[in-house]
Image (tube, rainbow, N blue to C red; front, side, top):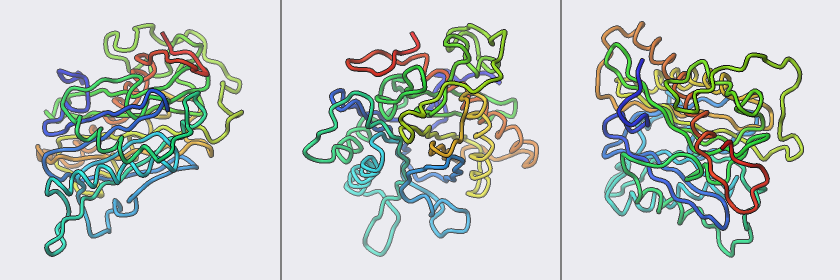
Length: 324
């Protein structure tokens, strides 16, 4: 597997990503969308998730496709970001047709970034505005690091951030990952070597290689702030998958989160993964192809997590420093 030209989730044709940030609040929103609705699934592994319209992503539900996915800071306040996205999509004539009405389908997930040194005394919830702004910024090129939903993200000892990575499979299918990293645990073994190092391509997050010694004791965590956590991700492919296959892809991708963050999926994290299919390329071998798609999704997600942390930058009043 080799990265796509951008090493971003937008190496999958048709997908676009937009970010919006508020530096004073130290928070932001990231939106994944496309020119046409796409199939999506979801799998939740963390013990404290925050979601909008997640139930409709189950394979037995009526609506099988969505218009956008939203990742946001702000804890429960951030769920309002999807409202801003939905309003803008409706104005553009997008959405599930119900008679003469259009209802945009915009699932979302949030992370907790309310204790990161930003000014949270807003007079009005800012996330609806940030959601609409992120959608308007959607493009095939986008920044990673301290931006979008990763603007105010933190780990146990370092800043988190927004990350992305991609891979092209021998079958010709492309897989990509997009993630906002705000874990209770950490992405590095010792402050330098990433847990995801065995999966690094080239020097995409520093090229330091694996740590020589792996600690056996309890790793650093943000237990002092308890619920100030959650890593939320999207994996995507151009392979033609139905909603049940997308759900399986999301489930497999969680392995990448466990490879890159220690500990992960804790009772205080709301760790979850959306999975997307743009249905650009049929499966040649449904069994073998789906096996490799799941492996690629997990690998891309591990790499994207490390890239998020590696590209984070400093901001005033940061409680923890960036990796670099």
